[in-house]
Length: 139
Picture 1 (cartoon, rainbow, N blue to C red):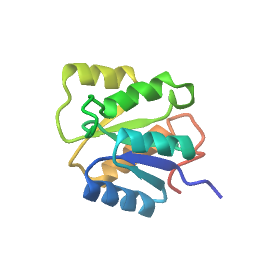
Picture 2: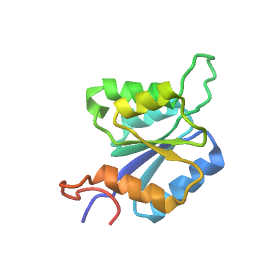
Picture 3: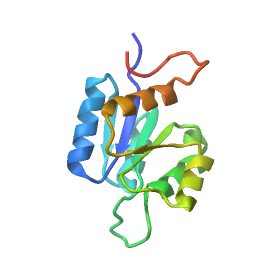
């Protein structure tokens, strides 16, 4: 039996986060939900995560500019997460600097709203790139 791929959904909109996790579970993924960078870091410290769906614009109660891209930078600078597939999830166009960071980090962009089938195709491709053996992902 193949282990279900664990996907961390980092999204501050509760209805979108809940819906995305429910749909991922229906597609045989094992979703984890976080509403902030801090919550995502706690999950990363406690659970094995295969890939991340990461909102760009996240609230920061401290006033410092903490966003999904700050988390992306952290992931790429941390050996354990440097190669984790990341799908940037945003409803707003990215600035040239943001897009450059995303591309340099090897992340992929998913502009909302789009069909969930596009999301599943992207996640499947990130988890099982061409030439790899399909060890995780939906069965």
